[in-house]
Image 1: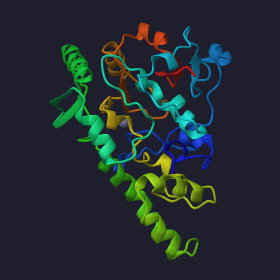
Image 2 (image 1 turned 180 degrees about the vertical axis):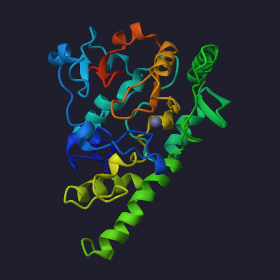
Image 3 (image 1 turned 45 degrees about the vertical axis):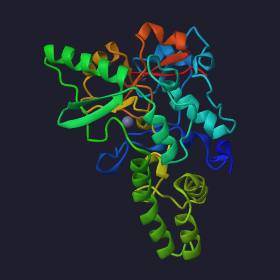
Image 4 (image 1 turned 90 degrees about the vertical axis):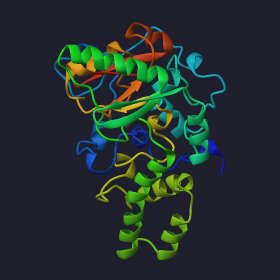
Length: 308
Ligand SMILES: [Zn+2]
């Protein structure tokens, strides 16, 4: 199977918006992650309504259309619609500066992730009771943000032990924790044959993604409560920004002062639907439009997303 076609045409594009969100897992699975949260991204024409209509994301067009020009050298452009959508909704970190972003949308397996992570300049630190590892520049600026916060009585800490770096196999484990019980359920109630379930179980996680999403088109859902798509529940393996060691899930994400402080040190929100998730972009806010990113305001939060 060609890499670029792995998700090809299997699901509606609006769903894949959240496929790459690395934060979601286990007991921290947010309750508010419903399709309604992602279904609309109003155009800049709604800009004047920002105050009166805070639930809708508001876009602010950047002056630069240079996202593609700022991608890392050797980046493999996705050719399928889902890959393109992933890039648009989730790809801000590909233009991060002072760090090493990946050169593809989806890591295929543990070997690919390990090879990528092994060549990075990394740094680890004990923060909030957890030992975290990030790309070095990202960690340096996080340390500065934490020190600055401390002087103001603000705490910045991770939500959990896997809030920074994640391994491919961790993302696979989270994926399997949804897929396996769901297969059992759907075989049990006769919606799926044991042979089909066995066939899916025998696939690599990479192959399972397309298969599971195809079944979901028929109403055979794989989220934890089996009522919605698995991608509202957990990120498909290989798509998490955490694999690139440029993301941090922050415990104090509800505090606007903490969000401002993180932005001051080049940590931004880049995925509109994933509120605890922050991404290191390596430049001051004034430099973000020049990287081809645009500002989206939603619920009082500022997100920087690819302007494509
Ligand atoms: Zn995250």
